[in-house]
Image 1 (cartoon, rainbow, N blue to C red):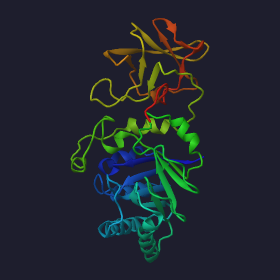
Image 2: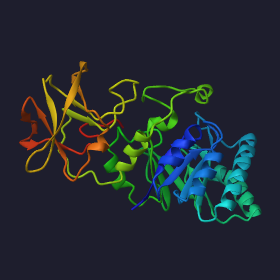
Image 3: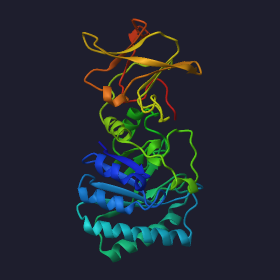
Image 4: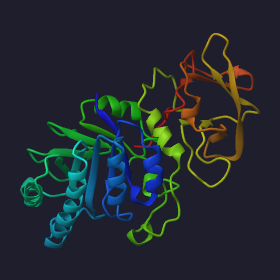
Amino acid sequence: MANFGIDYLGGAAFGDLVIKSHPEGWAAGFFAQEFGNAFPVVRKLAATGKAPTIRVHALWDAGHRYGSAEQIKAVRANLRKMCSIAKSNPKVRFLFSPYCEHNLTAAEMEKTLNVCKTVIKNQGISNIELVNCIWKGQEVKGVINEIHGDHATPKGNYIFSFDGLDCYNANTQQFKKKHAKADVFFFWTISMNLKKKDSEKISVAERLARSYRPKAVHIEAMIAMKAPKGKTNVPASVTIKPMSEDCGDLKSNKLLVLLKGKFKEVKLIRNNKKQTEIETLKRYDPPTGEFYRYYASKAGYEYVKKNLVLIKADGKILRYENKDILFCPAFRDGTYRI
């Protein structure tokens, strides 16, 4: 099974949360400079020993344009910073990605990678490995290739990250199965890039000025997705969201059940012999399209127990094709955003 990790990316802006909440034994990912200088956070996290693997993307370009002399110079400067941290933390495995999501040919990418190899050799570092993070670009032999979202699986050793595809809104269990052999499997959500909502667009100029910061609940919800989802039974007429978007109100970061029906009372029921009642959800009007929104009081992962959860609407267990509708609160189910 893959080694699990959290792709903080914007972690430079919320270093205290990373250091406090990062799970023991999980990998961590960062942008080197996009949200501020991440290397102080990387150094502190490495020193804790909680993250056996740390991956850093040196550069990001929204147009996926890479390989200029100026960019190679910036890559070299960032790698030297990483070498300094690696020397001080010999037990940590560092992964260095010059470019995040490139469109280069293998030969073009190797020009930058060869510069990186020279820097690492001259520094006498043995605990830094190079990563080739592709968008429409080509895989490179001899290094770890990295893909994001629903891109095709590379040959050989590779890294997977949800980067760009929020794991709260995807069929995460399916991705876990597909990439079970990945070297590192990174979870990622929009909050890691200082966004409240998936629909928000943030320019390069706005990133450092953003006041929004993720919370511990965002990290804890990703950690919960490591566990198996279990066999659920949720039709497209029912949508389960483990974490609603952060709107700055009482509905933020809560388990959300969307139903095609306006019910007076919707309850969560534990799927055990006694069918123990968990809580009554609160409906907020107006509906979202044809769906009515029913919110819990906590994030989905906080309801995960041994059994899955049933939905009772106006006193009756909801059913689909003669089967009770079952779901795991930690995962999105029913419909997905891909």
